[in-house]
Image (cartoon, rainbow, N blue to C red; front, side):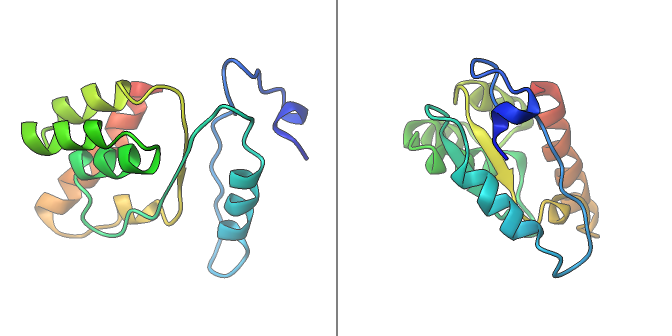
Length: 128
């Protein structure tokens, strides 16, 4: 299987996708396959977000993975506000974002962390 087989336009990039399933069914292995088959010219950011990533922390981690430490530094200097994170995410340019264990962004069960998780998800929806 290739991205081209799925109708992806090389200029537009790979299609958005979600892989859902129970534990130990091969989701991470499939994501590693996707990572190995990303079209040339598309930087890949593989992120395992863990619990408690704020939008700013998430964008800073993505920036480091695609070799843009200056973007991560800007977020850290400006503070991790949602607005700063969205602005800096837009400055990263085209990339393929692979979030393994992405459900951790949405399953934190403490008030402030739960709100932060919703902001992370919302940030990507705005960029989409």
